[in-house]
Image (cartoon, rainbow, N blue to C red; front, side, top):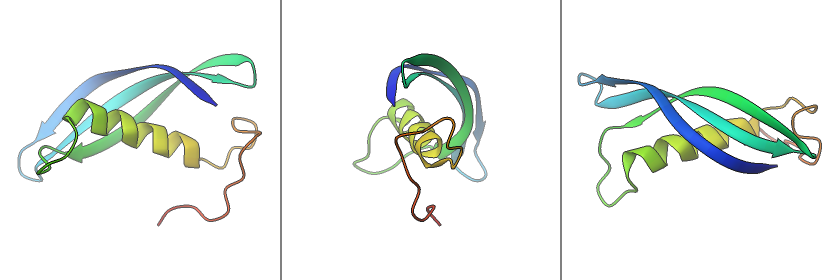
Length: 84
């Protein structure tokens, strides 16, 4: 799996929970096929010493995508135990 590009869209700020929700569109190459995947994710508005918000949202979406158990999407990966 190789991520070719990532775009953050549909950004919603929830000041009460201090989180930002967004949809991340990942353009990925999987086994020679290009796919576009939309993943809903969220991240804290601020993190002391952390990466910029956009980078954290994209990283979260990549992790969600990589951890999915759809073997057709990730033929080269085996999920031993999903993250809690």
